[in-house]
Image (cartoon, rainbow, N blue to C red):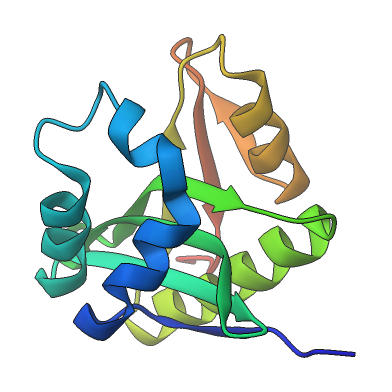
Length: 146
């Protein structure tokens, strides 16, 4: 059985990430700059995060977003996966991400998603995140403040 490796993406991982994203990168209407520059900016910016999950030296999942350390929360921009081990990939990535957040003293993880995006909503529910508000925000308290 091949073990998955989860790590923070580096510049040297950019081609692996672009290969993983494949055709999706050229069809992204919500990215205002080309995919390579967009992903590179997330990797380089200390206020962002971009984690990759590798299996057999290929990317099988990503989780990325923004860190608001001064506010005590992290915003997930996107969670993606490939393969038949969907739940395992997503859960392992999210557990890794939660530990990363705890080390940064982040107490809340949240995200927003279009209510028509049923696949992403299913993914957040898999992670036991709760719906908040009408726009469909998701969050998970990882450390009680009191």
